Amino acid sequence: MARKSDPQGREEVERSLEAYLQSVVTYPEPPEDFRPGKASARELLKYGYPRRPDRESEAHLLPLWEKAFARPHHRIRAEVEIDRVLLNRADRWARVVRDGRFAPSGWGGIVALTSDFSFSPPEPPTMVYGEMAVPAIAPDFDNPNTPMTVGFWVGIDGYGTNQVLQAGIAATVTGENVDYWTWFEWFPAPPVRIPNFPIERGDVVTVLVCAPSVGQGFASFLNRQTGATTSVGFLPPPGLTALGATAEWIVEGISADLPNFTLFGFHECVAGTKTHRIDLSHPTETEIAGVSGNLTVAAAWGGSHVLVVWEGFR
Image 1 (cartoon, rainbow, N blue to C red):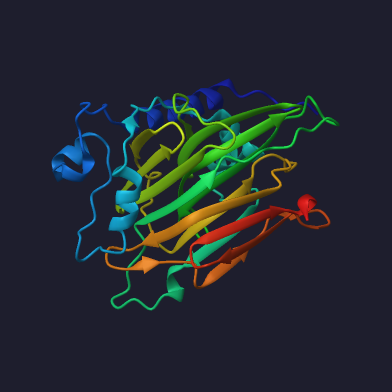
Image 2: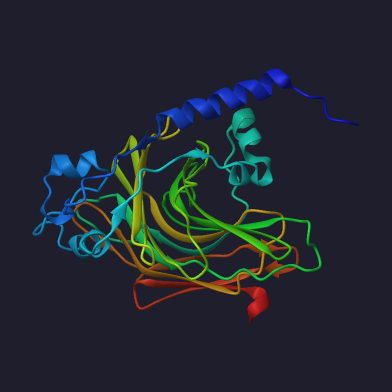
């Protein structure tokens, strides 16, 4: 039986998407002589830089901030659009509108549980950082007209919760053609693409995700090859705030079939609370499951590195 169209419901969804997109904050390009390391807190906020960690109380976070922003770079004011590819994964936005269920397609990677770290007093992670090389995606000559998509991201929450604050890169392969892009999301709010921040195979991209407050999200990207960097601020879904229960470094299967990305590495994997560093010393592995077994194998090593291997590469 053919499914009846619902133009009124579709229009409602589109209005919701557009309203959320309008709430995203982008930041102007700073003057050419702007130096983040010497800027005031007000200037950093104006141009979309994350707050500079305190040299004494946040010494565990300061090296990451300096690594990302002390070297020469140029800022791009982000253009934003609803990410239709990620939006439609497993028709999940329709499920969110209908019943609010949280249903990721499948995650392969490492999760750090806040409960595994004995902080006194307990503190949730407010930032997650990772470096990733844009991977090669093998062409699919057997299905040249069928797009297959995979995402690579860092995030806060999502593992065992009904929300996730995340940002990263994604790739769609259709036959021999591969499309790469950057994106961010605070699920179940819609995913957002940054079309004017180009990335290519082999580029090293750093991604920083922050929850400066429980009701505010922030993501910053840096392409080390081009020197381009951009940042965005965005709101949580209605009725939700950041929990800080977990930090993740994840490969996510977006389409029904997982494209062959061979192996993928996250490096300099660090999460932080206001006063503590969270590393990968207590890793929890999660894998993308297939019909006949897991499609990925994830491992952490050295306290700050994650490797996710596609099962066809082993």
